[in-house]
Length: 283
Ligand SMILES: [Zn+2]
Image (cartoon, rainbow, N blue to C red; front, top):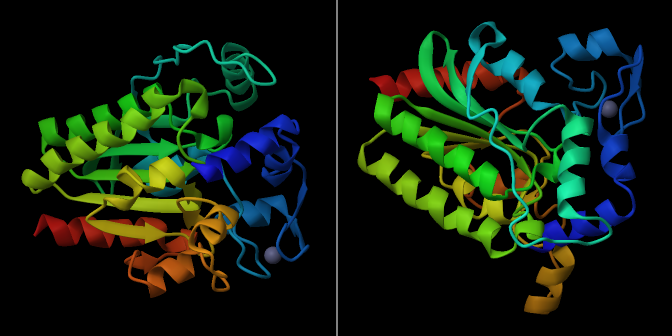
């Protein structure tokens, strides 16, 4: 939850950090890791990965759909599901206003898009989160759309692929957002009983309530390089366990080293890797 709190503090500062991290539409883009100035068209053809230092730019759900799914096509489901404001939450602004602003800014109705698509002609149930929408936070609608994506995989007996990008549970919905963890995890247990494969893809960042539920429950869990992964923020952990934390902890590389991850995959290899895994499970 504390990652979410970190996000909350940033949100109070007016979302500027989040906005700065997004890719500008200009002719040239600057790598936020090494400072390299890259021709945007070149960056695009390089899967939005820095040509100099391999830094993976944060990209929208729409770009991932183009990269991962055949012909960049997703038959979207539940597109019109929208969050209510169940506990009439208010911080610096009303949650209902925050939702409206997020919809305008992102062009999305919620922080996840789900539907049916194909990878190498194999039909899959697919869901992709988008950080642009309130930090990819998981409220009731995100949980419900993920739950329905799992159910579609069960009903059609097709594999499930979820690409996560999230600051965690959406505190503006209180306990209802935390309940999504149990709901999605319970359905994934049914999916596992049916022996239907689930591949979880973690992108930068995948943290807190999402990491602690469906994102970490894949039969295979893969991540992009140097993604921030974890549950609570470093300071909370440090205070709780009273110990200094090792360098590089909460990165994909650290998670791989400790056995929490199966593989780190460069974005340019993402579709190929998913294809190999899905074909393997098909046998
Ligand atoms: Zn770079």
